[in-house]
Image: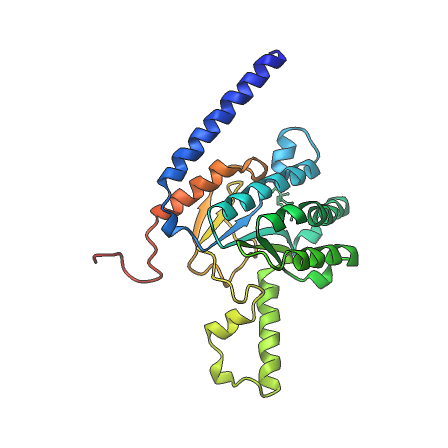
Length: 266
Ligand code: FPP
């Protein structure tokens, strides 16, 4: 196919995507959007391997998907988005991949900062940031500081994050308060625990999106996902775009959430 053919095919597929997007948007009730969406950005490696490319290219493309989802969340006035970027278990990957990902976080913090600010995004990093090397933790902290006035969307970036560690850290902080007499053990309830998690002050996710077809939580937000609706799609994260995000929202709005109660009318 010649260049003309490629350009015209791309134009046709872009026009189709806009039509799909408009159609999906018309199915969404803006008054019932999730207050918090969580995503496990999975499938970068498979995306790259399918194309005979190094896994790192998949991670690079994953940043573009994150950008699209952040934009759309802000556009739709979804107040909180959490994205799983690096788990406490990801240190088991080959050192070159880990080091590439660390550099990618630093690059993201530098390159995306202005656009995030313009879009009213406030970045909050959840995870053991102190366990990262100083140049990475400094870049991440600088991004948090620079974007702290964002009013439209809170973007929780989970870096060196593990839900079990998050719960351990919360238990330690609570135990400390009990030990020093600031908290009576009788007062410890779900709210107190929630207030000591990295996500303190934010609503629990209403929707969890897991691309790449995996049905597991991978140690992500274990406490906060207790009543969350799950959406699993075979689409690999680097291919995940606006249409896929809108599809997830449409599915979410079809669910009847009962929080342990009964179906309406029963
Ligand atoms: C899991 O896919 C993905 C990761 C461990 C890294 C996710 C990171 C990004 C998308 C980079 C963007 C983030 C920021 C904040 C710059 P995988 O590699 O396990 O995929 P596979 O299961 O197909 O091998």
